[in-house]
Length: 239
Image 1: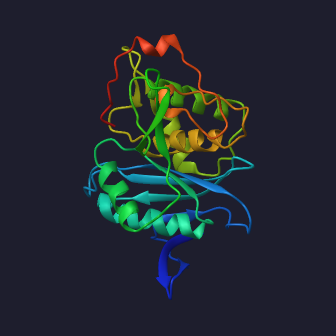
Image 2: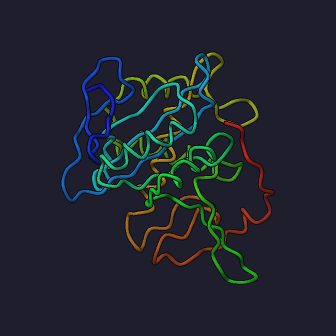
């Protein structure tokens, strides 16, 4: 199904429209938990796309996608509709660049189920939180490697031709960084990579996320200090 959401009398309804921004492969099921990973673009008509994927927390199937050109603040409102439609889904928005505007909208709309990055302070032995997902020199290689593993091993249920096509043009450059080929896009790849980390965070108390310290800290998980990351200075990507 392809279409868009409208709000009527406090309820989110889906209207079929072949020109819509939203593709649905599986409708929300009562009692199921869902997560959403979102990559935010500037909103220019000829620029990158904003994109969000909805994933089933139990099966790791991708059940819906939002993809289109839209201003970052309006994208936040669309994410609220998407999250409410999928049982108040757990939403993770990249907090780099324009994502901060989208996150601000989520807060203004009083959407409560939002992912926070977690940072462990060894000096005070406390966890601090930052709204949204941080893509940095620490997190990007690990989130992309984990996505590659889950795609290779068929752990993700993928029904989206657009995502598959962007994966084929997502490359490792000579300097080791990963990006879309020139003239191509990677919005779907980044959105799914963020989504996967949210799905993994909820796998249970024994799961240790394959991400650095600032992203760890799901309830019940003992924090692990990795010296390999302590020596790397934080540097955010502009993606």
